[in-house]
Image 1: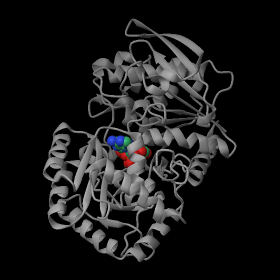
Image 2 (image 1 turned 180 degrees about the horizontal axis):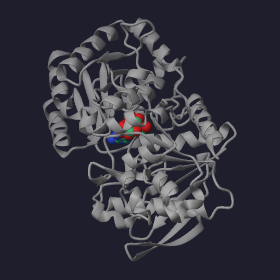
Image 3 (image 1 turned 45 degrees about the vertical axis):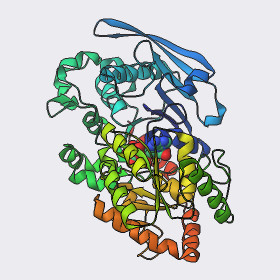
Image 4 (image 1 turned 60 degrees about the vertical axis):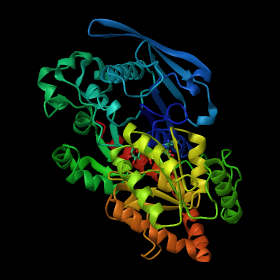
Length: 473
Ligand code: ADP
Ligand code: GLC
């Protein structure tokens, strides 16, 4: 099976969040089970890209709205990735420091998708499936099925993975000229709510649509930022497939970021050493229960209530807290200010640091995830693998991966609402459990034994593609 993954992010090339982790691992696991999966993504000015060994695979002059952009596709020589990687460099459009956040993002990503399709078009060996991730690649199924330029690709199945339906990439019809030619009668396929909506267009045009956990698909059918009706209408082709984790990158026994490596057997001494090092770095007390938060400081993650949670928890309980995150400026400054008030029991690193995230999973006793929306969530799966207990709001993928301690086989702490009261109450439960160290260490063992590696889900995607292969005329 020849699979092409098209994505805006891919770890370790460019990462903003979990999308990168998924696209950086899934193809590797698909290749291990006998497929030929490749990744194509935009070329950004990231540290990885700057150092990468590349060769030019394809050049193309892309004309958009009468302006010509020079594009080249670079093949990256990095066997450690586990899949061939191609970078689409479009002069003045993709080659920037950040992945997202520019005013001309619609143009940047449409141009990327158009060049990626031109590259596929000239291949001798066409793929069996084109797998698109999120709205940044959502116009591909439409272009493949309805644009004359790509008519040679119209029988190739397309799959859309929705990692996050909060972001849909809408832009005005006035900018429609950035797309390749299509019949006016097909305009409706692009439209949702009077805008060109790439995510909606992908839901309409992709052969299959999946979310990154089963519960998130159920939730989207009820509430999807305006797309619920569409998803219900297309439900026959919709499915939920739970993400996995890259069990090699995220392995406490070999993780080079850790102060001390450990496995299930040595978890006690290993985790203690990592907790001590983390507390030293953050000026905290390693003898107290340590709670952490890692993530984008956005509404979906419940980060706006984080300052109030920390404030109340530190007044009620003798615990320590660490935050690693960046995002909304107001939340960032509230979190930074709290570190002055609670010096010695709370601290934060405002920013993004891959190394530190690994050290936090290995060092904190509990990980807070009060998410309002969590399509899958990888943090809780990393936490489990590192023997750190997740405290989650039961939603989306969190609901599918964490069982509350009060239930049979439970190993985490779950609450219903993204509210200060619910989270602080859960922190109280955590403190009680922490006191029974013998039992707590047994639960850590259970957590570390849980299998969330990509093997199973990689196979589920391949089975899905195989079904589509049979549908090809
Ligand atoms: P999302 O994709 O919605 O941000 P996920 O749970 O799927 O959420 O994935 C988040 C990923 O980003 C994880 O790999 C997590 O460790 C990482 N991450 C988030 N914020 C930071 C940060 N400030 N520093 C380092 N890693 C971070
Ligand atoms: C999105 C979601 C997150 C998910 C990730 C990878 O960023 O917010 O829940 O884990 O994609 O699929």
